[in-house]
Amino acid sequence: MSQRFILNETSYHGHGAIKEIVTEVKSRGFKKALIVTDKDLVKFKVVKKIADLLDKNKLAYEIFDEVKANPSVDIVKSGVKAFKKAKADYMIAIGGGSPQDTAKGIGIIINNPEFADVVSLEGVAPTKNKSVPVIAVATTAGTAAETTINYVITDEKKRRKFVCVDPHDIPVVAVVDPDMMSSMPKGLTAATGMDALTHAIEGYTTLAAWELADTLNLKAIELISKNLRKAVENDPDAREAMALGQYVTGMAFSNVGLGVVHGMAHPLSAFYDTPHGVANAVLLPYVMEFNAPYTGTKFREIAKAMGVKNVDKMKQAEYREAAIKAVTKLKKDVGIPKTLKEIGVKKEDLEALADAAMADVCTGGNPRPCTKALVLEVYKKAFNGK
Image: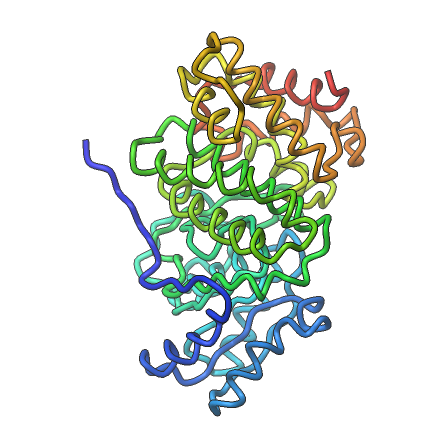
């Protein structure tokens, strides 16, 4: 059986990596950028770091800053109009998952106009053409959207998020510069870091996991568990390690998929606008407990990667419990709430949430087969904390 692995054409890592944007624009012959971002990143002058580089080198651009958390169908449509109006030929996506996902949707529709309704891109849409070129600049250490073939859009009319999986949407260049992440507040650093850990653990245990992806995901688990606490305190070395860790797991899970943590988290964002990283972080230990009997020896390796001592002397039940406890402790240490109740989920919505989770494309990759009744039970445990 053959295995497919799709990565960016080029990626840059480390302090000062954003300077290479100019190199790439000139070498590729791009003429005018549409910068896709959000108003906060403009307000706090994060976008200015890129704009100043473009201005200094007399490279043309316009800014589309209408992106919001959990970007909607209408935001993508607005971005398509903005791209056409600007007469741009490429995009620079600056931000976390929301600007990156928006840029992917815009880029695909520009070159595949038959999907202009956006919703028809759900799942594995039969697009024929590659996206408009995107240079993706990460400002959070979590989503790894700069290196994945996935993006998530919210259908506000139906109160649901849908996942798009398309090899044609991957950014041609990824820029992972920890200097672009230094202004992240503690809460966002914690949530996006736990999002990255969720990617690594789900990617390591998903049904499609295999050796190349496993190697990357285990390294990501190690990097994240060692550095997230310090990154929350804005330690520059820890931020750089987190930037790498989230990218490394992005390389892997983009190619092997995820599981029911994401399947259950997406509806929370659609129903309550819950930040994606927070939703994943709250759910992760409960889903790990649910999945444990279907993971073979993988929780042993997760526990090792997270620094648990004497794992090889533990019995299966012990190392599975140790892995879950390590995740739970990290989650607590960085200030993530314990239960769904604490983040505003309503008990009367749990059944509808379970329906939505069962319809999510990520759920199919879960190592333990899911039914609505089983997913509902996990929601209930996560709601009550037991």
